[in-house]
Image (cartoon, rainbow, N blue to C red; front, side, top):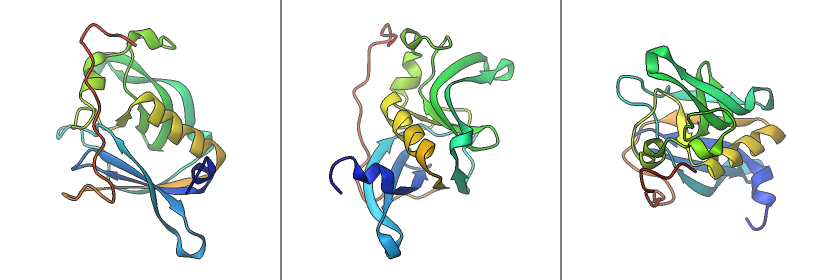
Length: 169
């Protein structure tokens, strides 16, 4: 699928909790969501606060440009960009920030933990990937299936470069 067209055809997102990997699938007409188009590295919930499993529908009415995350029982509030509600308090969102609408307050450890379980149940993503899901869902409903498998999927798991602990953007 070339160009920007594939984004309008994404109708299924699969989150593999075991591998901390998200795969976007595009619709192939009557054949359904069978075209894998992008793999995304993520952080799912820690064993004590696991990400839910199952299939849910993402809708535009449950997207937020910035959202308060966490709370007193989770060590205090942090913020996320490009949030898309999966179900209940479970979201896709960017890595966390210490202050609302302040991209220069990145929690470096949250970024550097991408690729392994590290959240309180949400699916954390790089900002560009959280924004991609947010924008797709703002244009049409998308199914998400969250599951466990030792097989990463049709693509290799993406790798990111770690950033220095003092970097805040």
